[in-house]
Amino acid sequence: MPIKQPDLTREKLLMAAYHEIHRQGFQAASIAGILDAARLTKRLTKGALYHHFPTKHALGLAVVDEVIHEKLAEMVFVPLQTSEQPVETLLSIIATRVQQRPQNFIELGCPLNNLMQEMSPLDEEFKLHLNAVLSAWKEAVENALVRGQQQGDIRLTVDCNAAALFVVSAWEGCIGIAKNIQSSDAFGLCMQELHCYVQGLRTSPRT
Image (cartoon, rainbow, N blue to C red; front, side, top):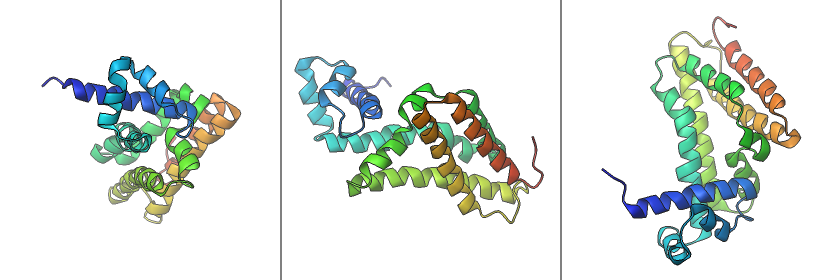
């Protein structure tokens, strides 16, 4: 069925807010900039915004829950959950990020990590929502590794909880370092090492 116009308006506002927050950070993000990016007429902007998101805070939380979480779900969570060979899928996801280095992440950093650094120390509700995304990421990787153990692909001595935490932390660290020194090559090298780490968890490490 076709999407109703109010839903399209909400989606435009969400995506505009996501890009504005990624560029500026949440605190510096401008409502005027978000509305301008959403390309709504001046007559509609205030009513549309306040109808869907009564406050800037509510809009920011929706960005975390409905944009950042969903982007990670599409890229990582769902492929791992539905794969019959989860370890191969995890390696493929990492390798794809090496080959297709996201330039906006090199320039601006990871939106999840940026918000964790900016908002978690300041706002308990933001911290809870951000931690939920981080936990879902770690859980998806951990479940993939546990299934790999059950299939005989991951060594039984591997602590899948600790390994998953390291994978997520290293992934975010790769983006953070690349952003800090503005180097796509640094991101690629770092992610290649992460790929090697996951390979090293296998019962028969492969190249």
